[in-house]
Length: 222
Image 1 (cartoon, rainbow, N blue to C red):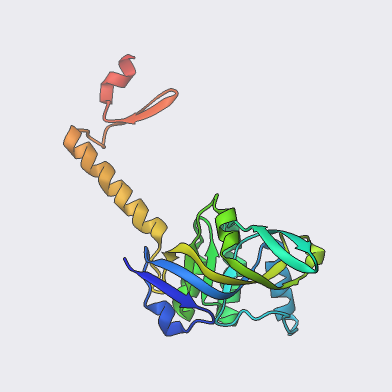
Image 2: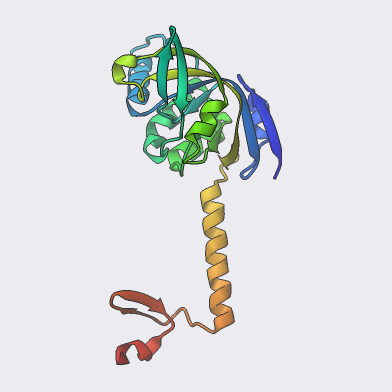
């Protein structure tokens, strides 16, 4: 595992060097996008319309910031990641159509996104839930905001960030995912524990309201 600092826009070669588990700090322009912004963006692309912001070679952050405006200047008060799994289909389309190199969010993303990132050369970075105030402090300025008619969290906020992070590579451009690696390691540990304790995993039973393995006929006697 290594630590990397990326400045946006970022090249495909820089992204392809990263692997699952690497720590990343981001600097440059990042666009926040949630549900309605994804749908509006895809709709505009399908009509051949020009987007008011740049996504090519850039970054999308699944985030709905809380902001206030003072003396005509926007200030971000909190900027935490939202769960990314629901953006799998639309996010994969944006990666494929616009070569979005970096997607930042929380939790897992589905197979369509894994394939898109692998084919185009992109990565998915995991941000930590509960750190919205910390991330807000890493935002240097609000460069612009688009589509406020969707509401503050759903608008596209164009943010200039300085060393946003630490973020962790959750999906790399080779198709590896942190979720799958963690799942395999967990099941391997479970199998080792069963073997050490002499549990026969072939004998399973359900003992309401609990399920257990290896109890055999003993459970039916309870």
